[in-house]
Image 1 (cartoon, rainbow over the protein chains, first blue to last red):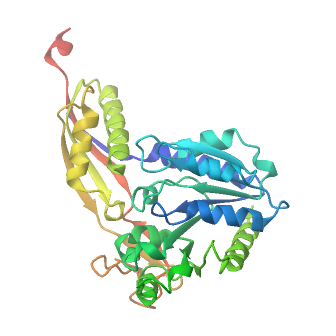
Image 2: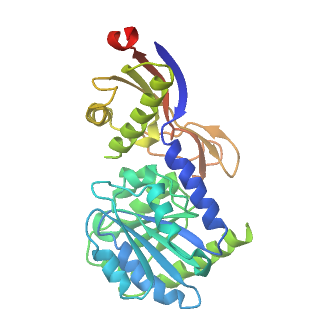
Image 3: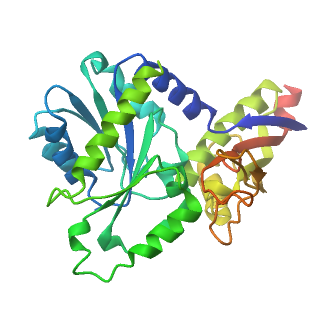
Length: 220
Length: 123
């Protein structure tokens, strides 16, 4: 017997993502899905970003990690609400994990919800979490060839952050290669060069966050 | 290895469909996967094999079909197929790379072939 079907295999994930989006839309917050390779500086960026946003814009962080709580411990020091999601062997966050986490949170008091995905440039790109914006990071030490290699991630990005730019002067990094690759993939996403260590570019990133939050809230 | 998540979800849906049709064993499953999903066919087949163990789909044959990518340029509205060889989503009409994806991301279970075990059928 042959059963003809047309079933979306990820419908369970997509349906939960849609519910997450609706729930997040009811609060005055901007939810961001941070995606990048391991070691590109997602946690360091958040450690610098959250204090810069200030207490009048309360943030919370969902941290996806395979096993450890190291990132969550670092963020705990900032006294922000941090929920650790251990994915075990899972290489990406799924909408259900985000649903469980935000179910425990008081979303109404938040201005920003940062979802730090598992460090991986392939799998997280395939799973909608219900976020408002996708933030993709590329750090200088990873090399200038990564945009083309992991193009589906960069094609979807709402903003591309080039991190650790303080290392540009000591590494052979061809910045125009990154710009040329992005010009073919995604001219919509702003390209922000920053260093969490020196603070360079952080102002532009913070401005972008506020603009996007205003845009999301006004569209409610 | 997002192949494993996809395989598990697909097997679950195939088993449910077979159950609704009164079948007890799944012999063949067809999946249509968008080219942008970056699914590696060999990895997908392995994941399927592994995830099917202990289910009515154990030993299932998997047919994979790739769905081409179709995009629409947000600024000018032109519909086009991105040049994946050149890793370019730039619009052939206006040159901007601001593409909304219309196809190429889906993962669709298109058919399930199944049968009823002799014993179950007669009991």
